[in-house]
Amino acid sequence: MSEAKLSVRDLRKVFVDGEREVVALGGASFDLVENEFATLVGTSGCGKSTLLMVAAGLEEPTAGQVLVNGRGIRGPGRDRGMVFQTYTLFPWLTVQKNVEFALRAEQMSKEERRGVAREHLSLVGLEGFANAYPRQLSGGMRQRVAIARALSYRPQILLMDEPFGALDAQTRQLMQELLTRLWEQHRLTVLFVTHDIDEAVFLSDRVLVMTNRPGRIKMDIRVELERPRRFELLASPEFLEYKGELLRSVREESLKTAEIPV
Image (cartoon, rainbow, N blue to C red):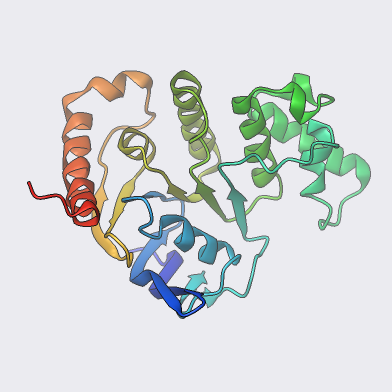
């Protein structure tokens, strides 16, 4: 087996609110190899986003660790790119300048930064909007800028926290197809978080189902569907079989949360 690119080792995270403790993660462990696309799914509050924030270096673990190429992370790093559900663009900067901002730590001339930004805007189909401001763009276009920005400094790992959750259904599907094309071109290692089972199956090599809080990895399902993936795949028997298995697993955890007898 290939050496792990990203390793999550017995990860625990406890939030303290006054005298109350909330155990968000209860010992989650898994490995991702290079160029793998994996998605975390589970009930609301199971710790998916918390795990991603720890992997990004934006939250400190209570115990356990996250490793990149076998080395423990210490805070955010250029080896990891992060895309959030909210667009996190600077409203006072143009689309071009928003992408260039991510390159400010690179040893590049202004002209080189401009060229790299243009290249990545072209990748997401927004080369014609370089001088527009975020307020002039649709939600899907803003998220494409955020993805271009995250890819611009060539991180080894892309972390994505429900990046399409705020989009309408049609735009969301188009963004999923765009992301699969970008992944196929760049062969990044991706850890993606979503509530949407269809999205998880369509995008992923593996889907990791988390237990109800405290979050652990309950199931690790390898998605053996042909790539490149297209919209028509959603109606195939193979796709529906994966979807059914995952829905059943997540439903089991949802019922525990709701304490509803069935």
